[in-house]
Image (cartoon, rainbow, N blue to C red; front, side):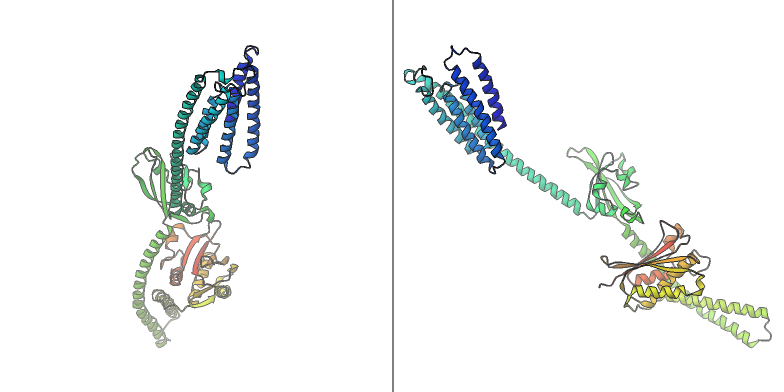
Length: 539
């Protein structure tokens, strides 16, 4: 529509100005042509305005275009008729309509337009040759030679036929190219969708970065592992999310795979950065279709649970060896120890008058320390040879509350206070005496870390994960970082007095229940917290 208006305005305007340069008396058709051109311009603008109004209401645009082509053919035919057909200078307009129609209509439409154009031109040429639509003083067609009619008919007929053939050929090729382009576009979209779905469905994190180290793509697994949304990660330097990877990205010796490494990074921001993550990372080249380096591809997996499981397995092996050795040593020590203590008591009874007070005190020290050693051996044997679990479904809150009450009433605590800050309702299948032993050891360990201080206890249920957490926190000085990996090993202790079996027993009992236990320092304050996780019974 805009092309039609522009073309009519330029061509007809130029011809209109040309007619104005000629004296009206010298050209009989001058005045008539000027009027016809004026009418043509007005009709073109009027029809375009009408088309513009109807366009928003038209749903089948190809039919609408065909109607416009038909109206244009009629309009051009009238213009040719009233401007001296068959010698009208506007016969070329048929060729423009044929070309335009072949573009906007199917190939068969271009042939129909060419035939219609030829028929209409012959018709208006005959009418012009016969003197119709000419001024009264113009010569009639009957007085003109027939060759004057045949020459423009042949010239314009050949031109229209050739134009129609060429336009049809071009239209067919354009249609085929459009189909191929649409097919390739669909294939590219399918390929892009497949590429996106494959990347997003990967269980390992995948990040692509440009040559400056800024993130270009970021899949769902990477967002889950690093705790960062993809929208927040795009455009950021990858070193902010993976500290320590810069040296591998800037390496000059780039092969198919730059490096395989393990990185230790802070925990996800969504968890307050608590804990650490161990990532197995592979960095490789990222090239375009021409083989030019455009960035790096970073593939990584979270190995934290795997490394913890490996460490737990190694620790379990060490504990098993220590347990067997402890059981053997305990049996070998208990019998001589019982003989020593029994002999001292028998000597004290056999010679009550001959034993001095100093010797009696020494004997009592031997008996007391023997009893203490016997208690330690009993505890060691209990750790090394545990009895089978007797599981029953209990209310954890009730069990914990009972233990807190018993523990707080123990006079040996020296004023230590215990507070239950959170108590989510939770049921679990546990061996109640063993669980009480776990709670007693945990509370005693916290009280020894901060004598006379405050112990905070929380029971947090995560029903969607099927877990319940019991957290015991003290406000003491905490545990040295170098000692944290060894706190659950038998006979390891940071205290001046202690057997080192309390936390080891807690670890073994919780593992027997299918749970986990960790000890770590509180990141935002003084003290340490023992974190016990047990399976939660379904409702």
